[in-house]
Length: 611
Ligand code: M6R
Image 1 (cartoon, protein in one colour):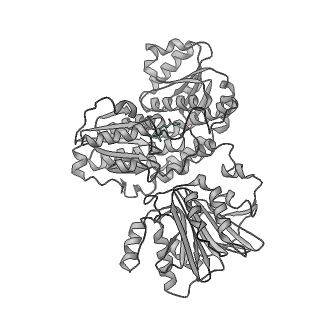
Image 2 (cartoon, protein in one colour):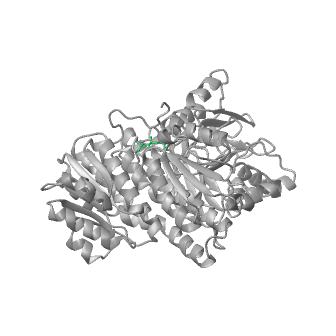
Image 3 (cartoon, protein in one colour):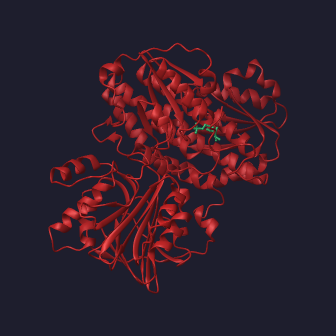
């Protein structure tokens, strides 16, 4: 999820680009760069790190010119270095491209282009686009838009692409396949942005490109074509939002925005990793089959929400691979003298990739000779240096302190990893693998479906916003959801909440229940369903108000619920990806009802870089 800005007009491009990029920095902030066309040449400046590094570099390098593009990067391919920062240019240095998304077939295209003599200067997937356009333009008699059209038809994956050329200084060419991109024009100028804040100072009339469209933006004019090359009509939308609302995409808070970004986050985590032939492709994992076959145990270490993703992953790995899994809080693991050797696989999970305890745990595991894998959302983060294999979640930056979309992305990545281990060790039949992959493919749409519960959850949250305690119960993977639901409620609403194994209630916690105590039950559709129903009956008999998450259409759950959130059916081990969503919305709306700011809960930081 990167930030893109483009400008063409009679004024200076650079200040417009830098201003827009600063406003889009919430979309990505691990490097930034600009390209400006002036006097028949292309000038490019790129810097790793936040915008201020680029701004410093530009202090001594003025870039006059009325055509330019800028980019703030959230890395997906290649670490966040100066060289991997966008814009990327072709061999001649006359074409510049910025990109948001993932080009899945970049390696095949790169090999072909290198074979034709193109020289690559970065590790990114994006650079192939600059060289493809160059190569098509070299054939002659086509303009930049046509070259873009031919290029996008060669690409697989997701992309919002913006391109400028010294040889066609009258327009900016834009293409969209999935990630959003908007264009606009006002008197004497043309604009491009990956999000509304970048354009707001110049125009409130924007054209959001549809999927599979190409636009040509010139001063005062926008034209749009489909991927077959037919010119199409487009709609202009008038935006009334102020800047702060625009940064949050019109949502009241980043947390709500990020909850609604979850279909996309999960789609991106799976992108390129589910082969149509029915197998899992993990390019980042380089261990050979023998090494994976020799693994005798897996140890998962993490903190907070990432730990809850690990709780669910333990079930998936054990069930699909039959390898025993230990799960530990990173802060406990590092001090408990664990038994590890060269047949152990230690998986560290950290969305930030910077959590001090998780980093220390992985370093320790490495010293003990274990194989180390990391699951993280941040390319270039410290955890990527300590791991032998890194699985990126590709969820895009998460601004709200409370993790939401990165949790669903972690669950997805860990399921992929578990299936990959099963595949490489021959632990799963082809039929079961194919069935599970199909169920995973359905998840993004099912998440969209669960998000429709928003109003129901909001109404329920109003009824419980005054409580002082809440109990969340579940079994199996449902327990991970219960723990995560309780953590969300605690951290943003400051209500005392406990996540509990439903079967453990009778051993103590049931004493907490009195008239009106809310008990949130995760009734995941699996073999423990009847046992969960029995636990729900027990708490109701003691006066609890029950809020249940249950598979759609189950009448037994309905008869036992004060509030019922129905979710679509999926494979039992995939249920946390759907069941967590009502819990996130519930915590969010309880916090709002209590007048609290969900994005900035007291006493907490997004990334815990100290012990
Ligand atoms: O970056 P990490 O995933 O390692 O962060 C771990 C926890 O600090 C984090 O999940 C924390 O619990 C969140 N605030 C939960 O919403």
